[in-house]
Length: 340
Image 1 (tube, rainbow, N blue to C red):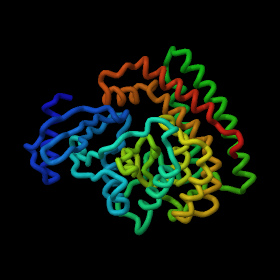
Image 2: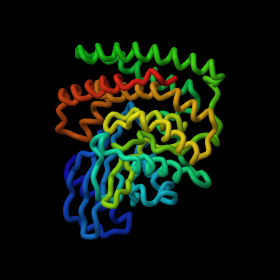
Image 3: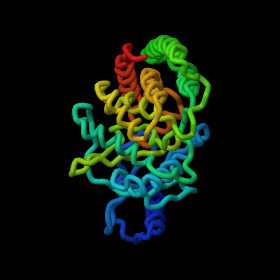
Image 4: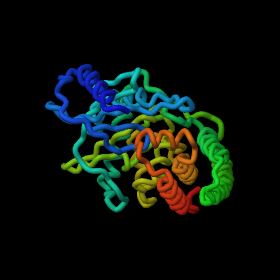
C-alpha cells in the first residue's frame, strides 16, 4: 500500500468525521493485529486509528461492516469500554477510530480479578435493553450444539487438505484429530445423559450480542486501570457458550480455568440465562480448545497466510509457523479432562 493511498484514505475519513483533513502530522503503520493494516494517525486535533480491512475472494466476510455496526450499538451501552467509531469507507474498506492510550496485557500473570469483572460487565452492558436494529450474526455464529461441532469439523477438514511437507504440522494435526475424536464422543455422551438437544436451535431470547474473539489480547489497560476492548470484526448475534469457549481458549493471553465457574455464573446471572446455557458452556470448553488449535494453525492455509502478510508485509513466515505450532501444542496440553 503506497503512502499516498493511505493519506488519501485518512483525509477522506477525517473530513467525513467532521475533522480538518489537512491537519495530519504523521501516519505510522503499527502491528497490532494479524488480519488488517493498522495505522496510527496523528493530527493537530488528536490521534486516531486508521484501519484497512483485508479482503479475499475466498473470504468475503464484511469485517469492517461488522465492526462498525457493533461499535455504534455498543457506544450507546458501554461508551467507556470501546473506542469511538468516527467514519468508514465502504468501497475502500477503511475505518477511522478513536486512539486509546494505554498498554496491552501481554501475559496471563497480569490478569487480575478486576479485569475478569470488567470483561463480564462489558458483555452484560452491551446486551442490556432493546436489541439494536440491523445487527448481523457473528462470524461462524452457532445456534445449536451441532453448529459448534460442525464448525470444528469444518476447520479440521480444511487443515487436512493442506499440502504441506512440514513434519511437525502433520504430526500435530494427527494429535489434534485424536483428541477431537475423544472430546466429540464424550460430548455426545454428555448430551444424551443430560437430555440436551443436538440440533434444536437455542431460542432467540437466549442469544447474545457477542464481540467474538473476545479476550484480554483484545483489551487496552488505561492509566486508571479500566479496560477498553477492541477488534470486533467478527461480532454479532451468537450463543453465549461460544463466547465463553473463545474466552477460555485464547492463546495470546490465556485465562486460567480457576476463573471459569465464576465467569460463567456472573455472565449468566447478569444476562439472566437459563440452566441449559450454563450446562452448554461447560460442555463446550474443550471443543473450543480444539477449535483454537485449528485457528492457530490457519497460517498453513494459503488465504489465511495472505491475510497475515497483508497486515505485516515483512513477516517471517517460517518463524511464524514455528511459533504457531508451539502455541497449538501448548493449547492442546490445556485440555481439561475433568470437564464434561
